[in-house]
Image 1 (cartoon, rainbow, N blue to C red):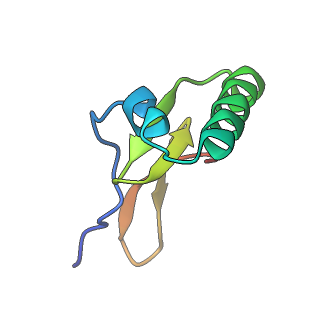
Image 2: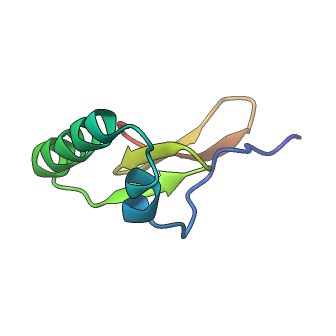
Length: 73
């Protein structure tokens, strides 16, 4: 069975957001990140190299395949 490539990492969300080249887009992303943290009551976490996720859940299909995924991102 193949494994998901998108998984939670220990990479820094702050470093990822600060690395956004366009100043306006970076400011917008920081604004959205603050809103998402407040609404979800979850700390942001990097999933793979480019997804900021909030919260997580475990799933299992009838086929037996299972994994973890972020609630929203």
